[in-house]
Length: 241
Image (cartoon, rainbow, N blue to C red; front, side, top):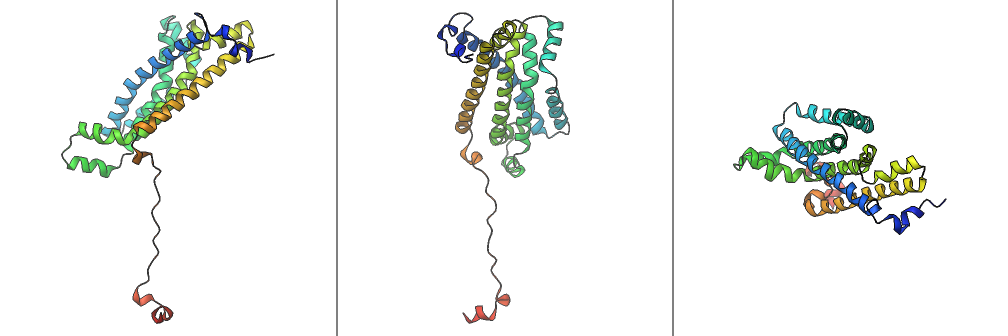
């Protein structure tokens, strides 16, 4: 059986239920989830990281604990309470998408060299200016790393929207399973995987553009200096030389 035949068949790409339309729907679900996750997680992670409160670690740990919930089971529970529509899948995706961004932002702020923060404070910067002009720029590598991790999880899990009758690339997987159309299932799975890799590469390129080269460079270890013996420690041969 030619499993790739369905994917390369041009007839499957057009129309209201074609690959192109499902791809647009999938990107829409992913984009909406990521925008909400960024609006919630970045300010919260920056605030608790900047405040250096003892509860910050508990907040991040609690958010990461939510990722252990089975997504499909959580979706069924939400649909039972809320009903059909995108609200249930959106909440389930946010449970997966928020923790990596929150943890990355919190860790990035907390890992900023305290000497840099103290220097900024000594120059007269207030707390808000220190956060926006010093801590966030230095924390950018870890923040973007959290965003990339969140994006990979959201784009790969957005297929669950099809489980409650919505669109997206998951439509091919669930419809293929119901119809025992295995080429369609495999084609849909390949599309999700390729989309996830492509988006990760795009964000990897953006990271190189947005992050300062000094922050991207790998830290070098301390240089080892050769000890020079004192005059009292020099050997007679050295003194003769």
